[in-house]
Image (cartoon, rainbow, N blue to C red; front, side, top):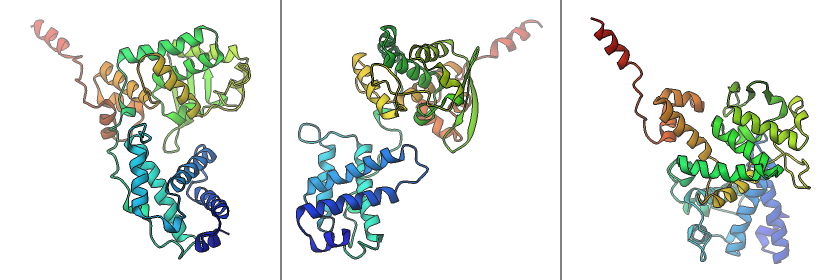
Amino acid sequence: MIETALQLNPTEGAQEVALRHALRLWADASTAPSTERREELQGYKQRVVASFFSFAGKSPREVSALDVEAWRDRLSRPKPDGLGLRANTVYARVCFLSSFFEWAMREPALRGQIGSNPARLALPKAPKAYQTESVRAWTDEQLQAIVEAVRAKAAAGEIVGKRDYALLLFYLVTGMRRQEVISLRGGDIKIDEHISLTGKVKGGDYVGREVRDPLLREAILDYLYSCGREGVLKTGGPLWTRHDRAGKPGAALTSHAFVKNLKRYGREAGVGDVHLHQTRHSFARIVAEETGSLIDTQDALGHRNAATTRVYVQRISVKRDKHSGRVTNRLRRH
């Protein structure tokens, strides 16, 4: 059916059905089985590419590089004429479209119907890594304002507020990555006098860590006891859940759902548009400023390459003087 739709250019309805089917096959083939939130990512990829064909009003075989360029410009053009998307988001979306055409040219049912990849010719220059707003660390004032905005929701007794407060603190005091925190299960965390964690990190390794912050410990327990989920610490259930039905726990919380809330908190705090990854950069900034050591910051972030850590702190902090006084004290003895 896909081959017939692309080759004969049938009625608009049949073309749309064939294209949706092709997008499902491509999304499945281009997303690794081990990918976190695989179905969610597949759906997003399909929506992105489908939005291009809706914009172009053409079948895949009719698309030119000029069509892709026009779509790319609309994505990046400021509102209200465009969508006002960031450079890295525009780049990712055009990459999805390019991936679809590459797949279509290899797919036996479509081979020969699409002779080239027009998206490859219109692909924008890849943005430089770590050069966007999403990686700027918050200042102490911004950090305090955001935490206070979430803490106010928790203090008012809102279950979602208690969950989001504990979750935000978790990101801030550990510097852990987006998926490392949101995917925690009850069996990954043990709370005694301190918090003990065991979980998988980027690269597939399992690591253990201790978190001694009493504020985080109190916030997690407050959240779990408030919604009657303290028993999750002895099970393999998700640590963070949705609370859509009068505060009752539901399905596992996704990072996208938390990010949506975090952006609202950022606006309420007067900080503006915020990004979840800024929690990790803020953690890195504070560790670097407090320790004065790139090595300590690299270890805290779990980076294998010190160059990556330098990007996170955006400068090499001045190493604090811990020893000169000891040397001069000895000199005074003689």
